[in-house]
Image 1 (tube, rainbow, N blue to C red):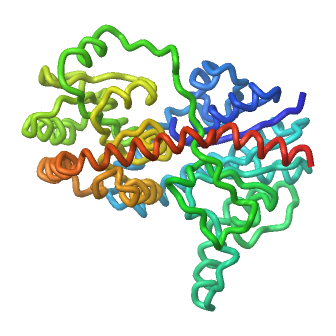
Image 2 (cartoon, rainbow, N blue to C red):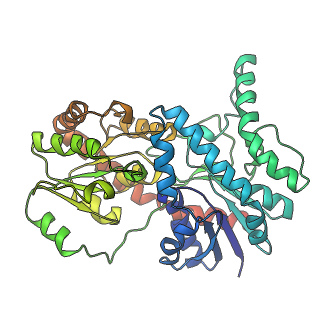
Image 3 (cartoon, one colour):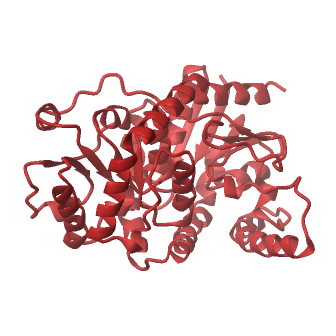
Length: 401
């Protein structure tokens, strides 16, 4: 049985795609190890995947909330998060190196963990990229200025990886592109959502989204009763953006007041600290972790932070959305949804107010039928792709060369 390992850092949305991929690889007879923050052990092991803790034992969503709370500027927030993650990657390299030993393949996730360690051990690797902006347009003619800018940015991004390369006596790289596999880079996004860039090299392949329907999920009595007794609700699901370092009553008030003003019922995920002493109207309910495959099918539309996983789920399950991105990569996914006409114009988190939320809700209300129809059409096409199965087929083809 061939052994595969992959390692990833970040919030639930950063690990979920690799849980889907690991499950499909195991189904096809591979021995898979998935390494991440210790806090994700239960999530991974519930899918019958071998888990290995990597890095410090921290509440990653709490840490992300603290970093997010320090600035409303998406670029600065993104840079701070990258610095935080890079530090974990550098400090975890010895653990990753040991876990890579005796493996037949390392799947290098979007965090690039395992790339250098696999190279040092001489183990084949392939990559996964979630953000199209991270793929170099190598086939595009470049001016001197654009090449200079790309080189400057590339060198800055390469710096933390060169610190790891130095440990293993590997030559430094000039740009982060050099640690992306020249054989296969999987992009788990649908071709019906993202058009393949003609300036990408051939190893960059759009597979379609990776997902799995939770067939056996049954909601608790409170949620079942709420869904049964009224119109379809709006879902407010801001991911790590609603994982508070402290109570954020003012922010929750904005949403609750806007929903009441325009007559929407709502389900609220997150805001756990705020909700401990907060009385929601009878037209609203809070809920914990519920599979997207169930919850999205019950709701009118979703208001979300535009992380990779939630953005993908809106397309997979055919539900329109109001995007509220906070960091730059989320803005990229928000624009994808907006350009596909399945979402309203992105509402930046720094511009949040009761009035701006009401405006977004009215935009959704006035264009809902068109956006819902578009979302359902794209959903149908996505489900015909079999994204995770296609990814495994490509991995097997690469391993059998």
